[in-house]
Image 1: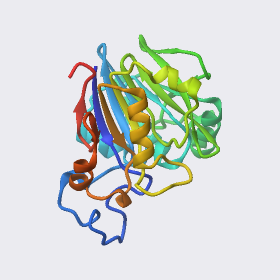
Image 2: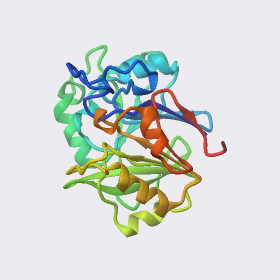
Image 3: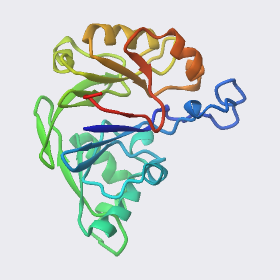
Image 4: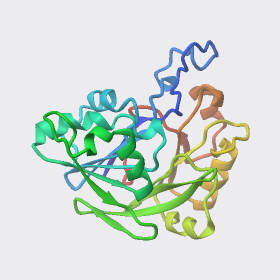
Length: 256
């Protein structure tokens, strides 16, 4: 399994429009963060978790030639806004693209992209096959077993996902003890941390580090990072062993 971080930024991305802070004016490639998403390549299949407004560029930048499925964590715009661009894969593959999401998220997609689901299938619109994710029910994506993990994004339920030894959680600020049991034993953990100061709907860096210590994965990567976190270089110096800030383009594997 190979995981590529397509984007590691928060909803505004980094740099933020019209911001002159140290992070937003940094020349380091590690401080250039598109909206959060990951590419998973396993067993000859290609999956993407979330398709935000940078989806098109992320596909081009990563050189993705085939897409088997998209898994959605939740319906916020920075996670779904790029869905229309799957039509390029429809054309190339001459097939529908499987979409996996909670029924609530599917309803949001039907409203946001009403023209896709109107029944007026004029040429060029995305062709999707919706699949419902149920809480506490492992599901199969092109032969790959996926365990959904229920977390809270303030008052909004959000799905994280575990595939083998890899667990991915974004946009969370609390996880129940029951759901943590699904994460334990992961070799690779990806968890969100927006900034160092308290936030209503995201883990802080300290909160993410506490979770990382509790889970005890071989390696933990921080994602969904805002410009308020600080520069990649300086924050990296503060992290304990086996914990790293993710950055756009980073490739990792449970075996590495």
